[in-house]
Amino acid sequence: MVRYILTRLLGLLFVLFVISLITFWLMHGVPGGPWAYGQQLMSDQQLAALEARYGLDKPVWQQYLTWLGGVVRFDFGMSFEHPDESVLQLIGRTWPITFHLGLMTLLVAFGIGIPLGIVSAVKQNTWVDYLATLLSIFGFVTPHFVWGILFILTFALYLKWLPTGGWEGPQYWILPVLAYAFAPIAMIARYTRASVVEALRADYVRTARAKGLTERTVMSRHVLRNAMIPMITVFGPLVPDLITGSIFIEAIFRIPGLGGYWVTSTFDRDYPMIIGLVLLWAVLIAITYLVTDILYVFFDPRVRIH
Amino acid sequence: MATAELDLTQRPPAKTLRKRSLYRDAARRFLRNRLSIVGLVIVVVLLIVAIFADDWFVAPLLGREPQPLIAHYGYDEAFIGPTGGFPSADFWMGTDLNGRDEWSRIVYGARISLSIAIFSQLLALCIGLPMGALAGWKGGKVDFVIMRIVDIMSALPVLLLAFLIMLRMGASYWNVLLALSLTTWIEICRLTRGQFLTLREKEFVEASRSVGARTPRIVFGQILPNALAPIIVSVTLGVPRAIFAEAALSFLGVGINPPTPSWGQMIGREGIANMTYFWHLAFFPAIMIAFTMLGFTLVGDGLRDALDPKAVEGKGS
Image 1 (tube, rainbow over the protein chains, first blue to last red):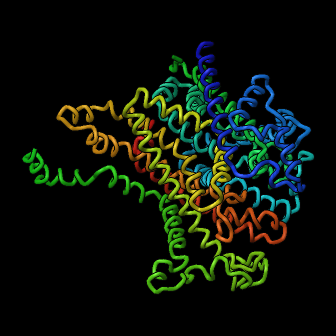
Image 2: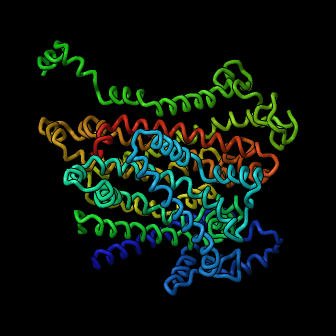
Image 3: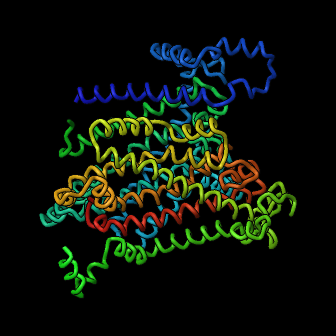
């Protein structure tokens, strides 16, 4: 097991290396530089001095080596747009907000999605099932920025129950979390339903019923336990997706989190921040897949690592 | 061989059996599913709206600019109505801040969104299918290299990657199309590879090899037709995702360049900023995005259920 994990981590290092190369090549190929669109007008000498200070006057391969040298010492450079903060500090300041939002969204998504899926599987082809299916289809097909807009229009502007945006207290959390959670709720409900329906048809469930077990025991010990296993692979990737935030949700609800930087860093040509974020994402994805694979082994004795 | 075939066609029961191919069966199952019919109707209506927004198909023959058909005005005809006018009998969805007819812009936007979504998925298919087929069929080193590329591509944040590609190449219709297919082909590649891996070990492949069929014949005649069903489903379900992605890129200002309208761009440029008063500027494009995604998702779901009869009873292969 330990050896398996180490091999996977070594593979991750290789992937990270190639990804950093690709990103470096892509982002330095984008026309314009970090100060080309600045509000302040700079003379050519000032611009040259600034570029020299950050090493942007050197060839790209040299910049890459300098950057790689920093990364080895866990120094990802200074953000161009926030010159008083390093990339790590900037992520450390903004990520907790996004993380908080993402965690609440995850809780809401699983808290509603799984029961919804189970109920519609057990009450298959009744009005409960149809209602849940309809709800999840609508959740599935409507982008979260559309929900955000509709929620603000309805609850904030028309009914005036909740604030339109900001991040100051629990009443500010409700709308973004709901808008953000809608699609995952729908997805979780759909997969849970499919998975439970499949488990309900299995022979071991008939056996369990034939043994005279109560419906409750059959559901919790046989159906749900088996239905959850395939769902690990489906739900795993939701976690990095939600905890890294969405530019749309954070822009629409004016949340000062990390989400916006996925886009603004590329607009600002904030090279250290771009590559920092790309690597953060790659690491999160890799960890998620590793954890889901390990969880699989724990929950499903039929699966072996080799 | 010839006599056996003759025998088959001469017996009536065998003839009816032959008609019941997978796709014929699938079509029947698809049409019996009420939700997929709803989806199909939505998609067809949207396609009609997109194609007949103006008479582009006869305009060149008559030697004039296309005239609006379903649209009421051209998408960039400014100040034909009040600026930021609310929906009315003349302007069904109101007018935007340049006094352009919102309905006409929505109709032209359908053309942009649908064509980008459909063509980007077809392009992704053109990249993903050969790559996946190659990896699954050849195995070994080829498979290793292709799968490492897929690994790396799937560890990159899609939005940021599409963003960098768009910034690097510049915002335009074709570049959006290219960026979207470059970020979505990996899924089709993975799926095709999986299909080829399982199918190439099947008895019927061995059988056709044993009677002397060459590789192209086996790949195109035997494996591909059998691998196609899940790939069709994946491409169909990719369309709503591409619609979302195009909307997202245009929303953020790196997608379709104004004045050409796209729903995401309409929300991003005027919709969000004026949501508190001119609600219709964000509302109608948002509803259209949701509606379109609904149509394609229902069709995709219907296709999946229709093409994979096993999915109902147990695990689909």
